[in-house]
Image 1 (cartoon, rainbow, N blue to C red):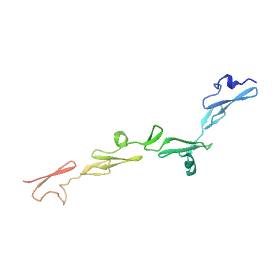
Image 2: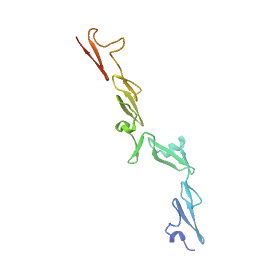
Image 3: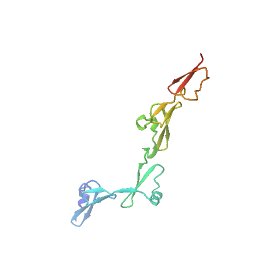
Image 4: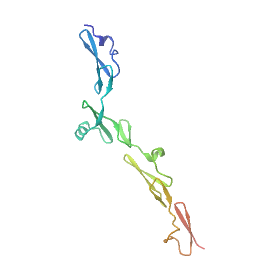
Length: 162
């Protein structure tokens, strides 16, 4: 019997398939994690691991555990808000990259594990994405002496004596 697999050095089968020698012939079979007829191999659908599979896979903090139809676990992806560096999923500092946060002008970005928050700066109010100046000089509680003039400025105010 001629070993077609050895003669072709494994090049007789397409990507994600391997050659298996048969008497008088050969066959292509899909690699583990792929399904098909050996000539058209597609990745097996993956789903999130259940708690038992997660424990067994021991993916590590901030990794996403996925499992395919063969029970093969995959820990290569990171949770949202994390990125892979030297094989570990580390927090993305959205505050250090303005394109990754929605904090508005006059707001402070505070990085948190996997996410961030926006808080209006002192002297401003809002939801952190839209912050408007607090006019300390209008309203019943003017912070200046009754005989001083109050002048509002963005995020602050000034009292001037006559």
